[in-house]
Image (cartoon, rainbow, N blue to C red):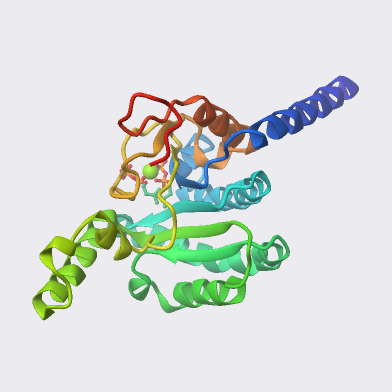
Length: 263
Ligand code: IPE
Ligand code: IPE
Ligand code: MG
């Protein structure tokens, strides 16, 4: 029985390797954005407190980050805490605010070893100082790394981001340093927190919810969307590879009649 199980496991790993090679020979999405959802339900299914789901979800972050890096993805944006998540109970918020510190304290050496660069979008100033310090330390330490950009969306809300961008442009217009005609897609994009990143090619949301929950509304204008019922703590390499395989079969037309157009 055990031998049979082990043979199956070896066969699964071989298959995963083969699929990985095939996927790597086709176009890999440059920027993948993930709404990591379903931690609470994962815990509930196991009669555990919600925070146990968040803790387990952190392990998935590590696994998917390493896998995305190995696949040659350039940027991975992970929605970790939204501007709306402050509505949750204090105890859950406190736990979530401890996770960046725990994650980065544990995995920073591994991120360095793999050349992964940590970044963050969202309002950092409103985070507790220990959360902010942990993130700032990781950003500083990994700033020269040349591998995957691991971008955490933390206290992030797309509408707030857009309001800030519009205000900045309005101020420049009022000061006479920008013409009204220069308020365009590129100047708006340049004021967003993602200004230095390409728009996501692929958005994944786990847990069966089919909505954006105020995530990258501008940047996702032409992304491919994949929704899966898998809960975030159960999401694994196989799920991620499958998402890329589906992405590679999509016909991206960007409004034209022919497929595989560049935007
Ligand atoms: C996602 O899991 C993590 C965060 C939003 C921080 P949830 O906590 O939303 O889990 P569900 O949706 O309640 O299952
Ligand atoms: C979105 O998930 C935010 C994150 C994953 C960080 P939520 O669980 O907060 O979204 P809603 O409330 O179901 O829309
Ligand atoms: Mg949720």
